[in-house]
Image (spheres, rainbow, N blue to C red):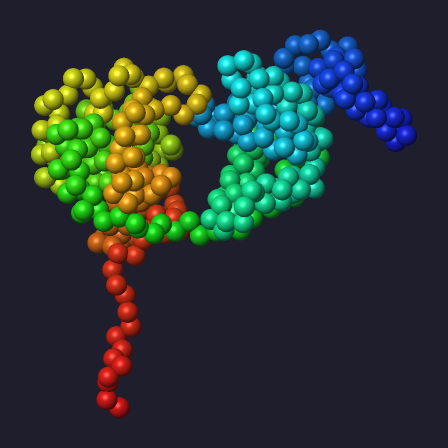
Length: 382
């Protein structure tokens, strides 16, 4: 509160709080002097910030954090949500993008000082978040994962490697806002297959190959090649090397991969090569999946799919075939990984899925495809 005297600081805090209630947040902020900058400093963006806000952290971090823009935006959204919910800032407007409500909500959250959030407040927010609207165990498991993701993403703005740069520009709170908040033990995310890949492929050839070729291509790329949705969305025909029988997954002018480990070559069978060579004969452009959108928006900071309509239609088709209700297309990638693991082992499955860590493959993606029982007979003679 700008004072070392606890009584004076308490009086000032009460005054500010009452102003917020009576005249609103913006007018209260304007009425009270901003103590963030040192006396005599101007409003230059590079001036040292004595008491940084959420907005200050996001703005300064954006100058040197090197992750993809969409990833950085997920960091910013996470820290804004944690601060807003922990500080009880109403969030009804944040979904009103057309009338400016979302912008007003963001500006309000961005004015909150970093040091106003404590570990105790974060834990209290998380406990309330985990309660949810029902006692459904599946829903609670999902909320545990979501809360862990939010905390992990918010910490991304204040990662250890970024702290020296941040501290050159601002006085960070000690301890840091999310220090001392342990992540919850995540529930098992192990994939359990609900589909039969051979049945799905057979049905797709009958129902999609001629009538809905874009959906058919997307299905093959997910189930046979194990591609992610973003990789499918931006895949170019030049990625296929039909002579060598491989599909190259790499960064292009339209798409940046999830990580460097995501790059690689995927082996294709002669049959799959023949199918895609045939499909290429009818192509009208450089993208494997045709779309009314000419190309992706490389400068977009939000997740955007040029083939979203294709994915939606394929998702509905997969659900009718018993596919996952939430992420039916991603389920195809998991199924592909499980099939490779059953035939060639987990190491090859991890390489096929292009994971950076084999633990990801074993913990999430693989389902048991073979019956395994002890070699014991109940009728064996003693």
